[in-house]
Amino acid sequence: TFIDYTLDDNGGTTTSSAHAPGWMQMAGTNLRATVALQEFWQLYPKELRAQQDGLMRVGIWPASAPKLQVFAGAMKTHTLMYGFSSLSSLNTTVAEVQANLVSDPPRGYCDSRHYAASGVFGNIASTNTLLNDTSAFRPASQTFALNYMTEVLDHRGDILFDRTDGNGSAVGHAFGMWNFGDSKIDAPTESWENGAWGASHAAFQWFAMSGNTEFLYLAETTARHFRDVVVQHSDIGTRFDYTESGNPAVSGGKASQLGKTRYTPNNKQHDMGNYHDGENHLDVFSGAALAYHWLLTGDALSLQVLGECYTYLRATWKRFFDAGNGGTDSTMTCPTTWLSNALLVAVAYEMANGLVDSSAAGMTDYVFNAISTRQTTVTTRDPNGVGFADNSGNFKAWEIGHLMEALEYFRWLRTSTGVDVMIEAGMNWLLGTNADVY
Image (cartoon, rainbow, N blue to C red; front, top):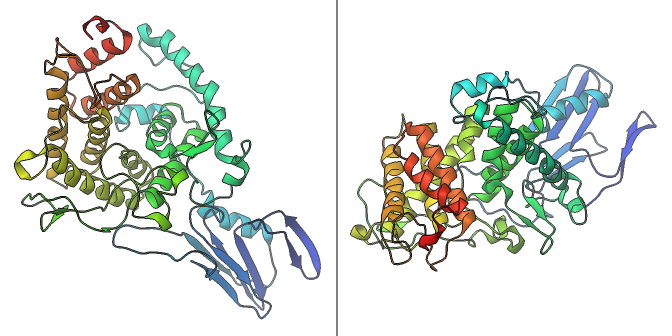
């Protein structure tokens, strides 16, 4: 909904706009009060109402919105800010500055060379904000790196433009709630997708490499959208019989739904009105970018929600891969994305919280060993034991690409050179070097 408004300052209109700015301010005798809500038009319903009698009402969940269903978990809906001054006049500039403290806060960041040297973002080189400096790359990689960065620049504008003021339905998307942080697709059908699945992780790395704040904006908004909307912050019903001593994801032989990734926003599967929908396995599972978000911003909520994702991973992994505890061993038949998504989240959680949670390293090993078994087992369609058939017997390049990314992430965390053979085999398959065996 768009709201035409005017701001009246002692009988004179000082500003007007097509929609409310997300803040309001009142002033009286020796008191000026300002209130602002983060991203007023995004994520969850909000309402600000300044009354003639001097009362300022903040609608955390206004009556006009659908009912909010609150469950256990690290669920977050709103961030708000109150500002008070011993002044008697309105000041819109001050109001806008204070509102930006929650919607577009000032940030301090260092030279990208320090991010690269920290090792937090993997084995990355550094470049400049224009992505055209390859001097920090190995000489043999510089030509490829420049070509790749040029490709990133060619598409970066499309991604950022569609996220805010793009064509068609993107204009409404800029002021829509459920899809904030998603990406727009124009072909083959116009739709929105959960861009947080992989965009956040990559954009955090590109920011760390270049210091380009547009990548930080992309990474931060998609990460918070995933964290605050897409993750299932509740145990809406346990299911799947199996047991595991000491696993907090299991209660009475049932697996919790806490930490599940809701997906397919076009089908309303990740809004609060359809909290029960979405997949119940690892095909659309995500959350790895929350480790970067926590390490870069210090936002502890991201670590807490990553812990929820990890809990769901432990439970669901047992269901599909542990035949000894009531599950089914799907190592050789599951879609490749189950393996890559599981490894990304396991590595991310171990990186962020492995020193505190002793189960993290074991879960990472558990997933990696399944991938190793899958890749090295000789099958009819893979006589050399280097293939990656999914449950339909197909070989999908994009799935192998995700798996290579996950293996590289694992290699960086464990500084394991042994996984190089697995990555080389996967890359050879993608390049067609060993295609004759299929």
